[in-house]
Each structure stands twice: as structure tokens, then as C-alpha cells.
Length: 290
Image 1 (cartoon, rainbow, N blue to C red):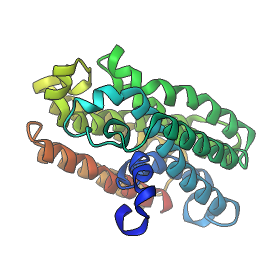
Image 2: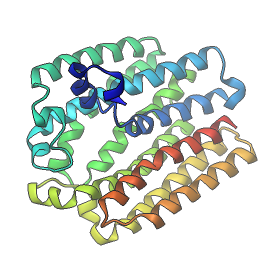
Image 3: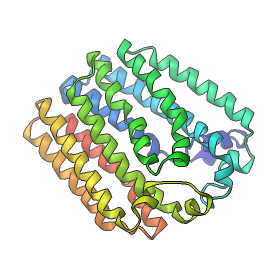
Image 4: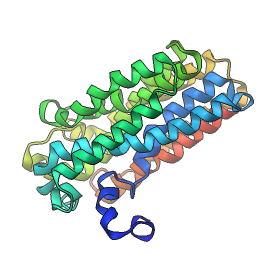
């Protein structure tokens, strides 16, 4: 898609922003959309201001996911060159210079700020709060076995921001969505990390995939179960109807199917199961709309 729609000179920047891999953007966007729609009362509330916020959040997700990827690659250039899957990334391969990456990063952060400032004060404050987490996240794999937990804390801020954009406060349903999102991310990013276990061990990078080892399936199942408990509790608190809650519970079968289908020793299986979380997130979104 990138090669089809962009001229050659722009393609390295698109790859730097991971525009060729939209799953990550969806996983960043969906918690914010869940919160926006639940706070608005479902499909009946999706009009006017809510529709505007949905668009702003979509734009912000593309921009900030791109910014986060650039920050990650600036920190990890040396590591990326040593891992087969990441050696072709623009900074690692030298098709984009660090200075060019910094210029693009500055432009993206400015664009993100412009979008953020069109929302409520609490949402703006949350946006500034998450920025240090975005900057520090790439270092977690050097310091802790739990970088996936830190990613969950960072990646699901949209659940708090979406709720605050509608109600100008953070309340219990948004905290439950946020907590559920953290457990969800712990599960799917542990799966994702299994692609690079051997390379990570060789170069000294830490992850929950290495921490859990042969017990990874059990841990992912626990994380997914906790995520569903939090999500169901959030839906009950906002007074979601029976059909909405039933669809949400049925979406949990999707997570169960992931765990059963996943072969932790097969990198292709890890990637495919990880990608399927976009479908789960969209099912939760449909439950929120109902």
C-alpha cells in the first residue's frame, strides 16, 4: 500500500511511522473509541460533538502511533540492526537519518498537540501525562522483564482520554476500561514478543515472553480473563443492555480461540494471533455501540 500510493522519496518515512502495519494504530485507537462511545451512551449518542471526537481520536492515533514508533527506533537503532525482523527498519538500515527522524517526530508532535488542544482540559492534561511514558517505553526492555506491562499502561491512555473528552472527568468505568486494556495488551504483546525470543536472548533484551517461557500460554489466558472481567464490569456500570453485554462476553470467545490456536514456538503463528486482536477490539466496539 505504501509503495502503491506514495512516491519513493516518502516511502522510508511511511515505513518509519509503520503506516504499512495499521494493526498497531487500531490497537492504540480502539480503547479511546470504546470510552467515547460508552460515555456517549452508545449509538444514540454518536452525533455532532461525539462524531467530531471520534475523528480527532482517529487522526491522533495515526499521528501518535507514528511518533511513538520513531521514538522507539531512535532508541533502538543498534538493537534493531541485530534482529532479523527489524534490521530493515529505516533508521537501522540507514534509509532515514536520525536528523530526518527528529524533524518528522517534531512535526508529528506538533500536529498531535494541535489535535489535543481541541478537546477538554482534562483530556489535554492526560495527553501531556502520557508523553513521558511514550518516550521512556523503549527503555523498559533494558530495565525490566515487564516492558509489555509498561506498554499497556501507555497504550491504553485513550480509554481515560476518551471518557474525559465527553465528561471532563475520569470516573470508574473509564478506569475499568483502562485496567482491562492493560491486561489485554499484556496478553497480545506477550504473544507478539515470542517472535523475537532467540534474538532477544542473544542481545540481552528482556520481555514477558522470556520471563514466562513455557508457561506463556497460561499467563496470556490469565491476562485475557482479567481483561474480560474489567471490560464486563465497565459495561455494567454504564448500564449497557443485555444484548451489548452478551456480545461483549461472546467476544471473549475470540480471546479463548487465540490462546488455543497460538503456537508459541512458531513466529508466524505469534504474528497472526497478535494481528487478530484488531478483530477482538472491533467486536468490543460493536458491543459499545449497541
